[in-house]
Length: 476
Image (cartoon, rainbow, N blue to C red; front, top):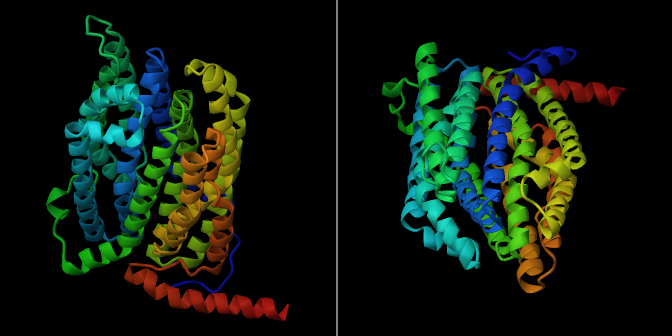
C-alpha cells in the first residue's frame, strides 16, 4: 500500500540504481558503436561509394529495427512490471510471445535482403554504383538478421530482470570478432581472400552468431531463471495474448509508422550527392555514440519506473520519472560537446575529406542541437510505456512526423532541391513542440497504468495521496 507520508527523495540510491542499469547498457552500445566506427574506417579505405552503400544497407536494418522494436517496448513493459510483482509465469509467457513476434519480423527482412536485394537498394538510392555494392553486401548480411533479433530479445529480458552484464559480455565478444574478421576478410589477411564489403558482411553474420552463443552459455552457467525456460515460454492463455497485443498495439503502430517515415526520409537523403551520402553514413555511425548513452537511460527508465509501478510503489515511480529525463538530457549535452570538440580527428580518420567533411560536420552540429530535446522526448516516451501508457507519446510522434516532418523533408529535398543540411535539419523540426506537450503529460501523472494486480490496487491510494498534496498546497 502506498504511504501518504512524503519522504525525501533518495538521490544516492537513485543514482546508484541508474549506474547499475545504465552503465552496462551504455558500455554495450559504446562497444557496438566503436565496432561500427572501425568498420567504417576499414570500408572507407575502399572508397566513398562503398561507405555510402553500406550506410544505406544499415538504413534497411534500421527499418527492421523499427518493425520489431514495438515488440521490444511492449515486452519490456510486461517484463519489468512482472519482475516488480515477482510473477515468474508472467515473465516467461510474455517473453515467449515477444520472441515469436520479433523473429517473424526478422525472417521477413532476411528474405527481403537475401532474395530481393536489388529491389531494396533501388528503393534507397538512384546511384547505380552504390546499388551494385549494396546488393553484394545485403545478400550476405541478411543472414545475420534473425541472429541479431534473437540477441536483442534476450538482451531485453535480461535487462528488464536486472542482469545487465550478460548482454554486455555478448557485445564484447561480438565486437572483437567483428573487428578481427573485418580485418581478415575485407583486405585478405592471413591467407583469406580479399572480399571487400562482402567480407564485412560475412564478419557481421559470424559476430552475431558469437553474441548469441556467449549469451546462452553464460545464462546456462549462471542458471538464469527465465531466459532458457523454453517449456514455460509458450504456455499462453487468451487473457495474456489479448493484454499483450492491446498494450503493444500503439507501440507497434508507432514504430512501424515511424520506421516507414524514416524510410521516406532516407529515400530523400539517398538522392543527395554522393559526398552527402558518404557523410550521412559516417554521421549515422557517430550518432550511435549518443544513442548508446541514451539507451542506458531508456533501459533505466523502463526498469526503475516499470518495476516500481508493477510492485505498487507508484509515488516512487513518479518521482524517478522526471529525474531520469533531465539526467539523460544533461549527459547527452556533455557527449555532444565532446563530439563537437574532437570532430576533426574523428571525421578525418573515418575517411571524410573536402565537401564530405564539411557536410559531415554540419550534420553533427545540427544533430547535437536537436539531440538534447530529442532524447528527452524518447526517455519520456519509454517511461510512459514502461508504466503502461503506450498511447500518448505514440500519437504525438506519429502525428507530427506525418503532418509536419515528412512534408518539410520531401519539399526541401525532392521539390525545392535545397542543400542537404537544410533537408536534414527539417528531420528534427517537431522536437521542441512535442517536448512541451510530453512534459505536461509527465507531470500530470496520468501515464501510470499498471498491468499487475498490486500496481492497480496501489493506484487508488496514490490518487488519494495526490489529492491530499494538492489540498495542502492550496492552503499554503
